[in-house]
Picture 1 (cartoon, rainbow, N blue to C red):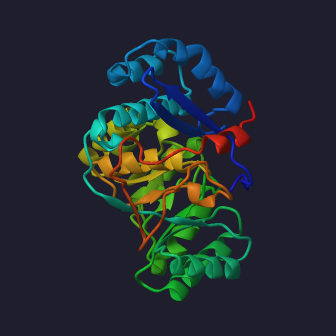
Picture 2: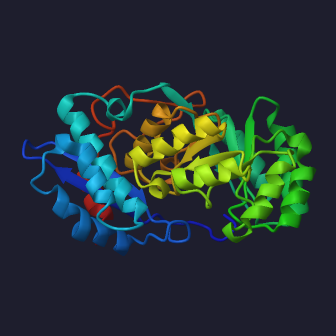
Length: 347
């Protein structure tokens, strides 16, 4: 990405065990430059502020419990998300239903997953994209804001020429540009058929980002500037964004994320859902769950378990024919490998 290259994942995993022996699992990725969450901070938030509200409680009161946990501490969206996800997994298993049924039910049974392209040179990006097309991908996000703008433009145009018209492309600058650079990019990639440009400018240049959106060249997707419903309402009404990237760790869990998604529909904003690089199939299954329940999802999803060298579940979510399928099994639909969890545990 514009500010960093990620080589390892630091994730919080929450395990909730009921008296009947059932276990619910939740997960959130560390995102200090996006949400301010650190691993030690998330662990402390769960152990010191949320766990006391859960121990001895009735898990079937999961909505009230999740709300109590959200109110137990400010910020800490990742920790709050992991706890609510674990509650939904646990209650779904107890009731024998997929967790998606607990958040309103599925509006779709599969979603299209994108693959991130961020190699140092164009040839490597094209080669990787072609390889992934062969593995079932048809949607790619170009990670921009790192090289010269001219090179980023050429990469988008070349990707379209090499991959053909039926492959979906978008771009994400992760706040790496100024308004001049972003404008140059928007004008230069007009022939590339991109779906959107994500967060080209930092949050302290939000009005300038609105100017980019109003150019009408490409919809501007808000990510770092969007947490939940409050930002969706403010930036959507002001015309600063044409769509948003919603994440469980930013919103603070499935319930507030779906509230923000419903507001997007009212405002006519496009939506993509993503995990922060790189969660396991636990958080990927949770993102898939809310993606299938979201009232709008025209920009697909970015599930990040696919970048891990090793997952923490026995049967990781798979991409087939450009789609990832919602599993019709109780809870989140993934069986956690507790030995892998123990192996990966650092605190």
